[in-house]
Amino acid sequence: MRKLLNTLYVTIPDTYLACEGENILIRVDDEIKFRVPVHNLEGIVCFNFTGASPKLMQLCCERGVSLSFLTQYGKFQARVTGKVSGNILLRKNQYRWTDNDDICVRLAKRFIAAKMMNCRAVLHRAIRDHPEVVDTSLLVSIMKLISDLGKKVDKAMDLHTLRGLEGQAANLYFSGFNELILAQKYAFQMTGRNRRPPLDRVNALLSFFYTLLAHEVTAALESVGLDPQAGFLHRDRPGRASLALDIMEELRSHFADRLTLNLINRNQIDGEGFVIKENGAVIMDDSTRKEVLTTWQKRKQEEITHPYLDEKVPLGLIPYIQAVLMARHIRGDIEDYPPFIWK
Image 1 (cartoon, rainbow, N blue to C red):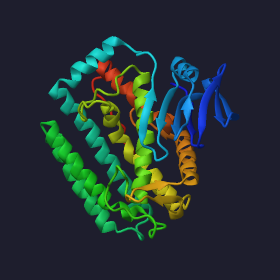
Image 2 (image 1 turned 135 degrees about the vertical axis):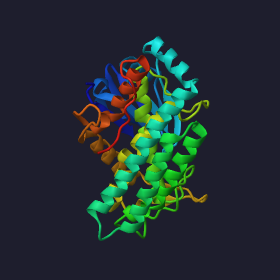
Image 3 (image 1 turned 45 degrees about the horizontal axis):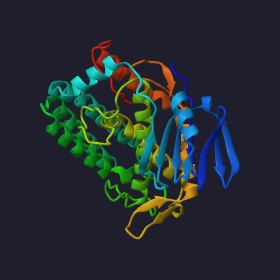
Image 4 (image 1 turned 30 degrees about the vertical axis):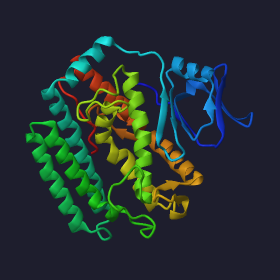
């Protein structure tokens, strides 16, 4: 099993990335603020960066360290990758599969069914842990409706129908999300799922975590030789990591949604740590972003039992494990793709 390394998140303004030998250097005004050996990293994510040296980019590419650049608000800007690696036969088979409607529908059902089950698990956990605080009847009703949609997923015959069912389930799930917020309700209320830009603090957190998760899944797919842009549920679009988005569907609720709720309900962040822009967009300030990133890193170190492997693994390895399972399925080593279902 691959070793879980660290992701370096660079949030200091006016930061320049460089390298010296096998070390990554973080410079501000020509002063070295931080130094870390490249072999300790699996990824670097830069927010609001000044720049990076070509030598640093080359080092990351040679050592398989993913390097991504985002705005200070978490919007993706660019990603640096090296030579295309992996088995060409695996990628050619992946491309053939994406052109096969039957295969796309079968795999899309796996992603969507797992997403629905994991969303129901988040709602069920709230009912189990806080029955006297949450609106149990509302959450039970939502769970029932999502379960009914899950039965329709199994019978769906085309991607258009599946996408419609997934959208209905997502709307139902988020319609009860405010019930899961147990603290600071005055500051954290969700006005439906919105993005580009997020219009409330909850959506700002969710969008930020989804961006981080997309980085993790994309890097995992590339590391096993798959093309992140050739997906099955999410169709081809220039610049879109469709396969990463496919696999993200089954991971969103466990990785991002639960962590968002934990940060709010445990009072690790507060409403004062967000800024509302003139266009209504809500963004995190620097201190809140650092707290969120620290919590994200700690969360990745927690161990869970993988539902398919039946082994304890760090949560941060789940994207890599799912990428490996997808590659094994496309190669024909396993009969079907086992999605991640939180138990």
